[in-house]
Length: 141
Image 1 (cartoon, rainbow, N blue to C red):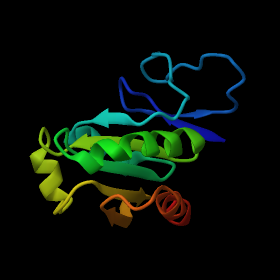
Image 2 (cartoon, rainbow, N blue to C red):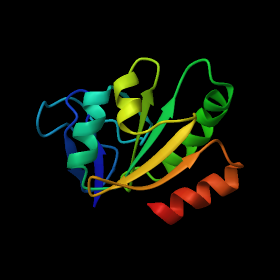
Image 3 (cartoon, rainbow, N blue to C red):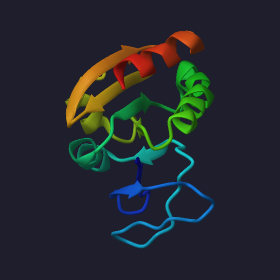
């Protein structure tokens, strides 16, 4: 069973199969993106998503001015799409959401935090080589 987060209302939806049909959110009826692409969130949306997620949630704490953050984006997108339905990948702009960054003790970016069952399970500061990053995601998801 795959789970996807609605980008509009934030609800998690169970999707039996991605057979070409366009599933819709059970709460708001918006079309669901089942590509697994990372979703931008605010601090409040992040807290709700982490608490209510039926699957692991990988959060990318980033900023537009951060070179390594920009380098991480296509790698994160690839990982997110390859694990679509198994994990949810969220992106939080630390400049626009400074309170959330403080709550999560962000000391440096990029910072990747994996949450399971509402709790932080692991964190990775900085961008490791692509293969090491993929291995890290596999090991903690």
